[in-house]
Length: 407
Image (cartoon, rainbow, N blue to C red; front, side, top):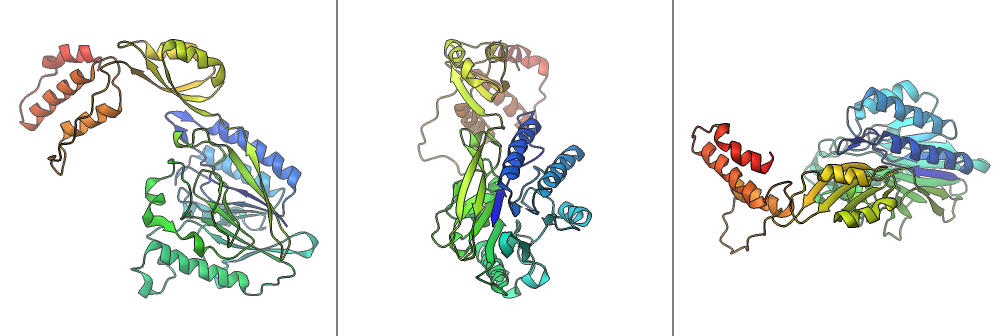
């Protein structure tokens, strides 16, 4: 049995104004070539095909074209991720899933309701797949006993996994069956990339890794960093995203997973690195230091901080002239006075900070551009004070300050 595990395409992603479509197309071409050479019996996509619930027509067309190309090589099963729309997946399944070459799994189902999928493999073997798409806190109670409705999310997912395990073992033939579990879940022990949706990688959405059904291979989606999970019971991996989705993934090596197994035997798992997605680079230095980096950046997507002795009004133009092949997403200018020094905490701070304190904290982390941070805070405080006291404020009164601050 040969399986390819892919995940988290996030088609339609726009990073700081830069569409990622070309990166997705390049990496898909790599995935397609690997699939042609590997000749899998099944391709499993563990969710987040799209970036949003309502992808554009162009992104829908791209995603469907990609999946159909893969389905010409082997059956493809696609799990609904937390970014995907279950309603859209149901429509896809109705329109495209009739020949079982391309199957969209919109929601978790009991084994007797089609929750276990069987596929023929080489030499008369059979792949038994238990798919578990993303389950929200609102939908997690759907087929649970009411007595469990007040349980923790992880305990509820345990019930789902035990049900799917029961379905896998029903009719299991150890001489011909290879068992696979696929899920879009955040499990304990996973290392995140800090680019996933914070709500859905919180403790409120964490499942227990040790509850993973005992299968030949467990394929996970949702976490963007490719990784093997720390469990002895089952060989489990996150395939990760094929391109760096956000700057939390800067420097990660992206890949897809190849699995080969025989009934009753240990699987052989390998990864193939992907290089089609443009790299993400965070650069910081003086003009002279940045020039030295120009040859190393190529066509990367860059956030750049230009360090100077004073405000540099042409920072963006200077940086753009240095990195002619790169896509410059953001330019910051850092110089003495561009950030505030943090205030020592005397332990007497009010429980709820006012807006001035919050803005001051912001200015300790983020440098201003073209103006002294203290001056920015002073104008902000003047405007806020006038608003809070219901005084009439004329923009003309602040004209000189605004000119100085380059607002």
